[in-house]
Amino acid sequence: MTTIRDVAKAAQVSVATVSRVLNNQGYVSAHSREKVERAIQELNYTPNAVARSLYKKKSKSIGFIIPDISNPFFPQLFRAVEKYLIDHEYTVLLFNSDDQLDRISNIMDSMRTEYVAGAIIVSDKIKEEHLAKLSIPVVAIDRVISEHVPSLTVNNYKNAREAIRYLVSQGCSNIAHVRGPKGVYNAEERFRGYRDEIAEQQLPSLVICGNYDLKTSLVATMELLDQHPEIDGIFAGNDIMAVGVIKALAKLGIQVPDQMKVIGFDGIEWGTTITPELTTMEQPIEQIGTKSGELLLNLIDGHVMDSHHYSFDAKLVVRDST
Image 1 (cartoon, helix red, strand yellow):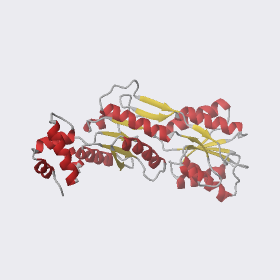
Image 2 (cartoon, helix red, strand yellow):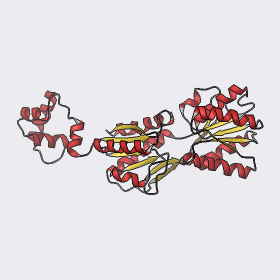
Image 3 (tube, helix red, strand yellow):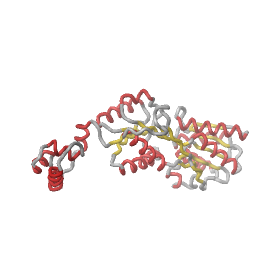
Image 4 (cartoon, one colour):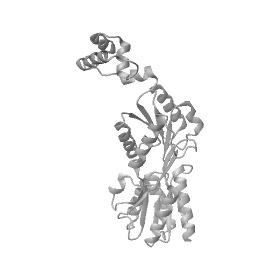
């Protein structure tokens, strides 16, 4: 394998001169630069990115921590982030944490070893004090860590209320909510939106926990409908749980949307692969991914941003489940 010393020998210059050319730092005469570039081309030399990052104590890598790789929302979000960062010559290292603090701590140790330039984090367990060990720019997505940590979220509260208003407009008067895990930021905001809109509409409130899990939401929905057969509409706190709801309704022989209307939240691709196709509050995943990458790279470059917190609106996408 060709090394930087081989390039220096072929170009008849010092290793330091080759390094200055590779990093485009420091003075190199036009003649020497030409000789180095010719040697690099003739020897087909590719700089070792890992070695360069170890030497410079920084790299062109970004760490991305997600809580659940099995939730298809996060691979879609990762793809959007990665697309933007690759276009800006960064690579993205994906870490699945299961939102466990001990795993997150180990991941942070790994990111320090890799000398990542910055991090994008989705977590309800990480607090601002946990980030001190990283000493790199951090951006939060889908969660708010603190007022001092830049974040990008949808307006979960507002959009949840919009989902309930839509079900009411479709004739629903007994609307249940399959909520996400307690203590999870977006689950709490979507529950709060449901609760307040139901109260304003003067409708009965029925809430079960589906834990952002298909099987849990399926079982919970069957139990709920056994106790409350009068329910005619269900708002699921994410699309995975909405799929669980629709499977439960199929098992019970309840027709969607004739006997029950179902709406989810997130806009993942699963929603178009089931029958009936899922009505949902669709997050602008591509826009969030692009903006998070842009924000992080600006922070890495030391730019001062006008705002550190960005809120996006989810869009009502009407399909066959309502």
